[in-house]
Image (tube, rainbow, N blue to C red):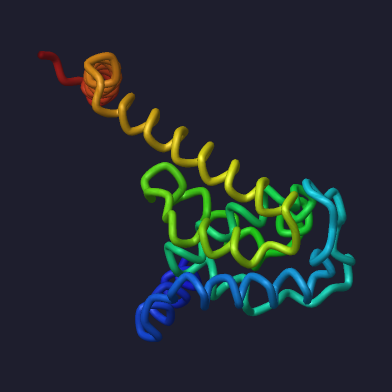
Length: 172
């Protein structure tokens, strides 16, 4: 947890990365892990002995970087398995997941990734992914604002408070 906070502080101190910087960092990470040039979606796994690229932590410390990492995981699903097997990788995955539902998609990241794509297939994949991510985010935000969610949240809170009161011998 402290390491994630340190990485976030380093990202803030260095200033937020722009879309081009994020794409450059992502390209370096993909090259270091042997993922560059793979067909999409790639089931290629990095070597078990591959060094953990420092660029992964830098990307995970920034909202734009996390968005690009989400795209990278969509393009290379096997990367998740490789990350899960390393403590640094678990921290990267945790950063991505913890912020996923609340971070709005960054269209500049997707546009830059599409511009930097190696070919039309990869460009189409990245643009389709960005559209699906936007749709999923908008649907989730609509759900959070819905009366159904509010009612379910209120009901869950009331049940938890009732259980807490029973546990501590309080009556209402």
